[in-house]
Length: 136
Picture (cartoon, rainbow, N blue to C red):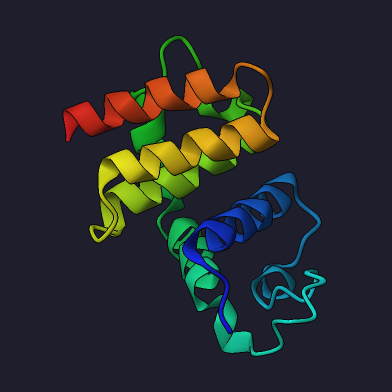
């Protein structure tokens, strides 16, 4: 049994936050052993979130550049780790995962922001991603 795409995005997001904050070893994050999901024993069940994390980190310079170009009076380094991880993951999906339509990527990002961010995170994330989508 593999994790679904929504759950996979949540796991990828959580791994990116841990990676960004520091102190988390990438290999430990990518085996998802920190998850307590007894029903999912097969390491292949985490291929989707692993691919998202690796893809985001491998392309982090380009992804951060795209985000920075679409921030209005903000600097990416000053964003909180939650909003930054959501944006990075979403920009990776928009640029490199053409199999997911942009409205779905943005909707998933808004849901992550509502679930894990501040009260205004979802508005901020939506505005930045909408700007990126409109420029591409």
